Amino acid sequence: MPNLRQLMMGAAGGESYTPGTPDATMYNCGTAGDGALGNDTETPNLSSMTQLGVKDNWATIVNGSRWTVGVKSGGTLWAFGSNYDGTLGDGTTVDKSSPIQIGLLSDWSHVAIQGGSSCFAIKTDGTLWAWGANYAGQLGLGDVVGRSSPVQVGALTDWSQACVGTNTAHFIKTDGTLWGSGYTGTRGNLGDNSIVNKSSPVQLGALTTWARVNNCTYGGCAVKTDGTLWGWGRNFYGEIGAGTYRTVYSSPIQVGALTDWFYCANTGFRQRVAVKTDGTLWSWGGSVNRYSPSNSSDKTSSPVQVGALTTWSDVWGRNGEAGGVAIKTDGTLWGWGDNGQGKIGDGTTTKRSSPVQVGASSDWTNPDVSVHSNTVAIVIDT
Image 1 (cartoon, rainbow, N blue to C red):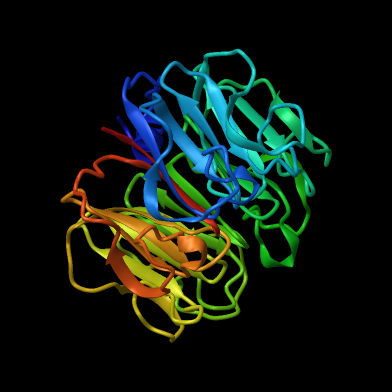
Image 2 (cartoon, rainbow, N blue to C red):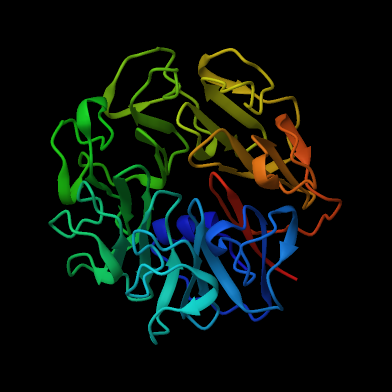
């Protein structure tokens, strides 16, 4: 099963993906509050990765602080957990402690966000849909009215990626252009070189070489097709990676001159983590209570390698607070950061300042992973 990052790479290359894997299973850990784990209960919290039900044909998932939305292999849309802002998309604001189907359609391709309380999804026809919170127009629907069920964003059919942070969303189209909507403020969150909020998607520059984008709490980071790394937004703690502190970048700037970056992720609101094509793991920004994967309490305004290993294959940041999850080429799962409610999944609630292996399994191959402040959700072939 292609993971979400592979879907992104395929979409950027003009390909499409239709869920069709028969035996993908979901695993969860962390808080059970508001039905966040989808196991029909609000207690207890789970400190180890635990299978959700039987093999249930999950294809791709995304989770917020206490909610999860996913697509199954038949193209149907499902959700569970907290529904405060209508984030489950079922037309209500009632929490659901076990997965429920959203509508009857079976043409959903994948849910494509990294955090926040707004949700985006893309259908197999390339249309973009949104629901949930819309305080700053981040849903891209031309207003600031929240939605409790999916609504199409415009009429275009060329969307390939979407992600959302704190009241700001970013998108990439199949032509490689970068777009944004929502709150920008004085920190340049949106990256369109303005301080005016946008309630409909606007293009960021004119380039057509954007490959992968990740929305950060107060900005964003992205990788181009040439392997260069870019960032924008707030930079109080050096989180842009440009070698400066407290310098705001209201449009994307290149981070260094290297061309071997694979993916960049936000972790908390002060840090970034990334993997390179050579299998190395990197981090930068402000270390919050020493929960950076580099095991340091010092700020760093440029990317610093985490250890000397060259066996890291992918990384996911923990939206909302410091921490993250990474996969190695040997199929092992690793995590670090704050571990309240057992959300690292290593069977403890001990905070980890460097990556620790989660369990002993080595079959976490090509997973679709979503990490948020209170939970981790993983879909994997079994």
